[in-house]
Amino acid sequence: MSDESCCSSVGVRASAAVLGVLGTLVVLGALAVYLVRVNQPAPVGSARADERKKTWTDLQAANVETLGGYGVVKADNGIYRIPVAKAMEVTVTEWKDGNAAGRAKLIQRLEESLKKATFE
Image 1: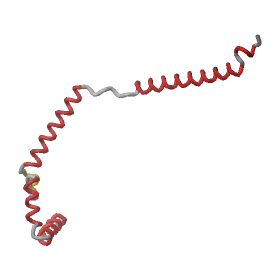
Image 2 (image 1 turned 180 degrees about the vertical axis):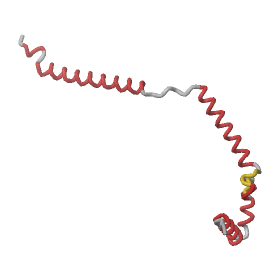
Image 3 (image 1 turned 120 degrees about the vertical axis):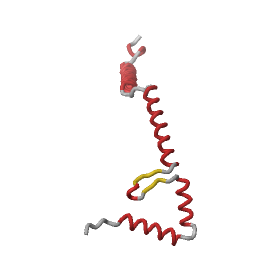
Image 4 (image 1 turned 30 degrees about the horizontal axis):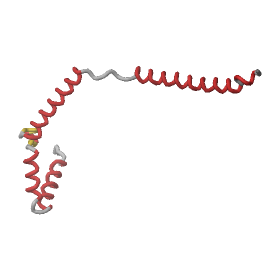
């Protein structure tokens, strides 16, 4: 029997190279999985979730009161808050007869808001 009949040196080198590449890929994959697990943030606890839910509920309750009720914003400037539904009705009424009346009121309000105080 000759030495080449069993395993040639080329075959051994090729299998060693394939085994080395596969080993490298396994090690890199294991490192990637490890890094992903280490760098993940901690899950949100139930206490934090309850706190966020309570904050959201309080915010919604405050918005319902603000958007759906009457109130005073700045009494000295004549700014008051009305419900959204009522504001939509007023807008439709002002703009119903064409753009002229509604546009005139809108421009008048703009000009009044842009007036600068004179101290003469």
